[in-house]
Amino acid sequence: MKTRILFACGCLGLGGAVATAAESSVAPAAVSAPAASVSTVQDELRTLVEKVRAKLSSGVRTEAALAEELKAFDALLAAHASEKTDEVAQVLLMKAMLYLQVFDDADRGAELLTQLKRDFPTTQLAGKVDEVLQQIEQQRESAALRAKLKPDAVFPDFTEQDLNGAPLSISGLKGKVVLVDFWATWCGPCVAELPNVLAAYGKYHDKGFEIVGISLDRSEDALKKFIAEKQMTWPQYFDGKAWDSKLGRQYGITSIPATFLLDRDGKIIARDLRGKELEAELAKALGE
Image (tube, rainbow, N blue to C red; front, side):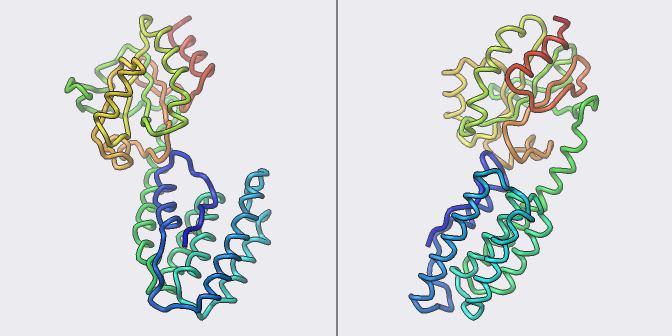
């Protein structure tokens, strides 16, 4: 059985973990239900998920607005309470995903995942709960780190080597206006924004603008091929660890693209600027 996730997370760290659990093809559970019952659960869940997705597509994203659907999840669980299978556990997982991915309520989402582990202990989904709970805790820690990276704060320095083995640090670029860009070749929004970044670099590099790319890719060869094709000549940090990247973890990055524009003293001017917003801030910072 394979059920689609409720909410397209894009380039999100936690989204990947939750999606892995939600989309995994699961084998029959240790305690099996009759085939007809399993089919009923799957069909009812599929119908309910599509109803939720339709509301999300229309812009409905609050717990209150989806109260009817939340009650439907509970009713479906109650109707199959005696069936300790992955198919029924999936119902509870999908409800948890609503809280994690749509309502942004990590506490309630974690409660529901803990309930899944308790109520469906023999299922494969229960075996994945601890991993997801660990990532939820990492998300909380990351949020605390990101909260410190606000305008006028000094961007914390690092001392690493770039993709070519050259020294790389923020302090080494003092006197430059710097865009710190967390990205990856596999991230659609990152690639979509790249033409704007390239244009800004071409226009302002000679006037004191520099970019530091921090890649969350896994393949060094793929990264080198991509930056050569796109003529991205600025330095790149890469350690091949994707979401577990040393610098990604250090700065609490859980979604990309994530950018920080720094002034000549290394203070944050703004975060996550796109398109014309980036060019406008660069013009001001460089005295244009």
